[in-house]
Amino acid sequence: MSSFVAVSEWDAHYAAGRGFRPVSSEEEEVFDQHVAQDGNGLSALDIGCGTGELANSLSARGYNVLGIDCAETAVSLASSRYRDVTGLAFECRNVEDDQWAATLPSYDLVTSRLSYAFVQNKNEFLKRVKDHLAPGGIFYVMTPLADRLPHSRRYIGLTAEETEELCRGWTKVKEHDLDAQHACYALTL
Image (cartoon, rainbow, N blue to C red; front, side, top):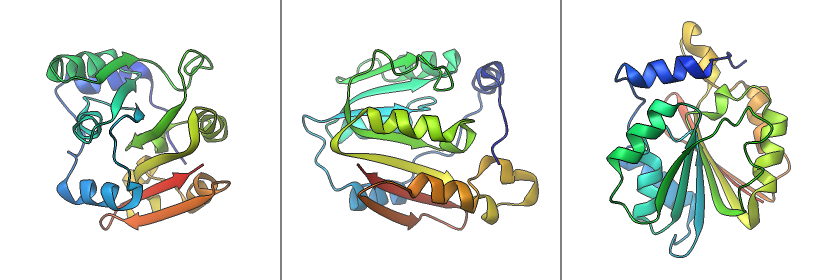
């Protein structure tokens, strides 16, 4: 159901000073409850990091974090905002490009907050995520669900079919309704 959004549109979004919903304390609690890992010494990849809020939150939990986003403006803003945070870096990479993961190592945690719904080829993306998770690693997704959104905004959420596809093939799946429109998934390899 996702709608294609060009990289230039994402860049314009951030250049105009717009962002996305901030990471809430409830979302952090859900993360802590469902991921249940001490981040000390672990690595994390935040895909679609935007201006870096979740990446910074992960860093505060002890993870060594690489945040990636296709929008150069977002990466620049995140790099500037969190330049003094140790163990936190940002790079401009496009997950729709076949080469996005060619030089990346395995990670203990991969996250996708409010961005998974916009991935066009979700099957290939999920394969790449699994290829870059360490054994027992977790893929954490926070996303709106299409059937809980107003009709005009359903394109930013996952359909029931896409949610089923997301949850297929993991050894453990934890799901949590964050609010009336959003759900969180902790998927263990």
